[in-house]
Image (cartoon, rainbow, N blue to C red; front, side, top):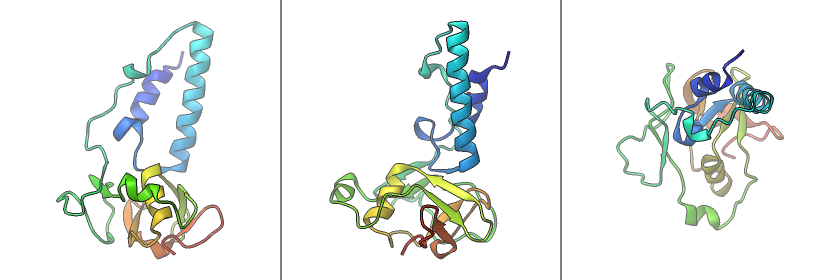
Length: 161
């Protein structure tokens, strides 16, 4: 029998089990594994509480509203790197004032053609202030690149415009 619990635990990362940026293939695989796990629970009558899924503590990615946070990185990368330890976002009050663009969570890197999915708070920051970031992360290239290299998957508009 496949241990879906173990497979899911190996895929979990970041705060509350979600990375700030995710590869679409990763998201689809995780969703399929979650469905299989649910089916396995139904078949075998097992109940596996969500809190039993271990969340790795190795360098989780976090968000901050403090522009002076010393963990922030800036600019583009010329070589592959991991996601930053922390990303700057607009505060909840400022995001609650409304959005000037749609909230979109997926963009495509025009250089490599791969799609990256970002968390909701980052997406809301882009929707409130499209020019807030000058670069963004490609999970395939593993680099922060200029936003001009990315397009939103739901229409092709350049990210940051």
